[in-house]
Length: 158
Image 1: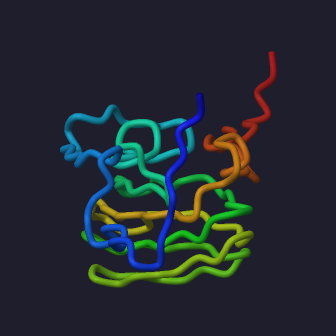
Image 2: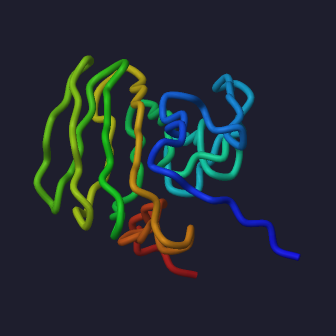
């Protein structure tokens, strides 16, 4: 037997101003997330579909020590919002450097190649948010360079 529900124009409206029952609240502290250093610097994805059940994007924090960078990449489906919480940051956008100081925010459109660099003498802390999500996680991020820079050839050979 199939249950059916009749609808009427006089029915009570759905509670659009209420949190859906299947969407629990989620809180996390930065110290609870292991750092990811694969792309350079220290990335911590704080809120994501994986841990918080988010459906529209994700939020994180990046930390760069002096001289560190996050390798160039782009997001085919998502725009990225950056907010510099501490320090001075250089962001290369399609090869053009942009300087951001503490308190600055930047919107990076989908498909824009970008690299984050700390050229200063103080640590940098950047808050990032991306959305919307890509159709599948493996499609959300495209690396265009390696996180490590090869050591210069000293010509010593063997």
